Image (cartoon, rainbow, N blue to C red; front, side):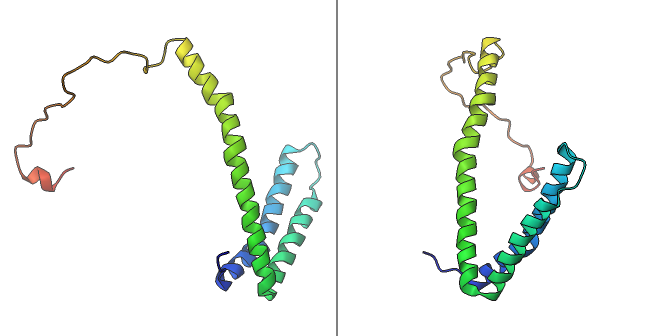
Length: 139
């Protein structure tokens, strides 16, 4: 296990202390706008704020608790990252890109299937610049 620096622990604690209440406020606003209820849901803001303030302040006060919180937070981020990579992206690919490519091929709009002419070489002659100044000022 890699050694965790105390500055990383403090930085993570401050992010939890400030960030989770902000996340709770954002989610409460999103649910108010999208949700069916016209009232503001204070429980979401309160829950995120309590968790963020308690974890952040305890991590600032105790370095060992801060290291534990740091490891747990990074494991949670790793799990979320793996879920996005191995679940969400394949679902998105097979629901959107694969049917799209099949439709493009079915309707004959794909440029991939056009046959290329066979040449002896694919090298193209390029006209050389007249002045050497062109090499210095390329654009």
